[in-house]
Length: 225
Ligand code: HEC
Ligand code: HEC
Image 1: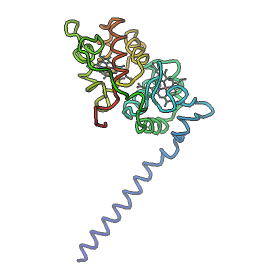
Image 2 (image 1 turned 120 degrees about the vertical axis):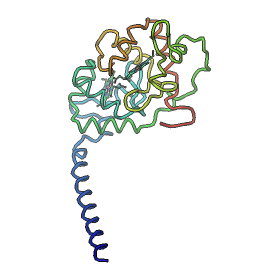
Image 3 (image 1 turned 135 degrees about the vertical axis):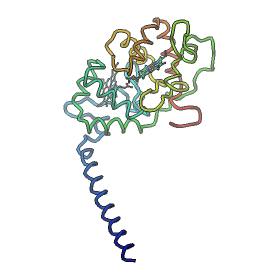
């Protein structure tokens, strides 16, 4: 009986020290700039993310959708802008100005934001002869180009932390990324997967595939990620 109570006490102490440890670990995030403020109002030195990425986080033109994207992937991208592995005159200074805690807070904030309804509207009826759709779903094996969906998931909804969603991204943004890999200004892809592939794409391939993915829903039919 005494043993039992001692164990119980020990358990309680363990729990208490566990809670303390968690408290300490959780502390840095308390110092992050409030993500909603950063997103919508910015700070004295950092522009509001919403001013380019949209109030609803849905993106536009060459500004990517952040809403509903994988948090770990977005965090990696901020690190890549900071290191210069991904070069962009607008995002590099912004990424540098964010502390590690700010980056974690703002990427989780956007990952949890629902994808705007307009972007998830009905996709065009399937047409296996449409060039963008063919490339996305089947690739071009004669040219050594695998299907985009092999890595980016069905309809481009993304797989895990490493393979981002490209569905419901603005076509201008997708095009800009494929061109950046061709030009070598973006060189942050693991084992150069995207650099090898982009080098084989023609201008019309890029246009067609970008348009097709921009009109795909961000989540699998009837499901959520
Ligand atoms: C002045 C416009 C502008 C502002 C303000 C801005 N961004 Fe961006 N952001 C861009 C552009 C343009 C890109 C695409 C860069 C490229 O082509 O590589 C981008 C890309 C990104 C990406 C990469 C997304 C992906 O899918 O790879 C992240 C993450 C990001 N921005 C986060 C933020 C956050 C967080 C803020 C606010 C603190 C912010 N941005 C403010 C213009 C902006
Ligand atoms: C062999 C795997 C693979 C295939 C096939 C592939 N991708 Fe990717 N793609 C990746 C990986 C990995 C990344 C993430 C790179 C990084 O970490 O920055 C990526 C990133 C991207 C991005 C940038 C997304 C963002 O928001 O940062 C775009 C756009 C893209 N791919 C388009 C395509 C298109 C279009 C195709 C088909 C023509 C394709 N990909 C085929 C692996 C692949």
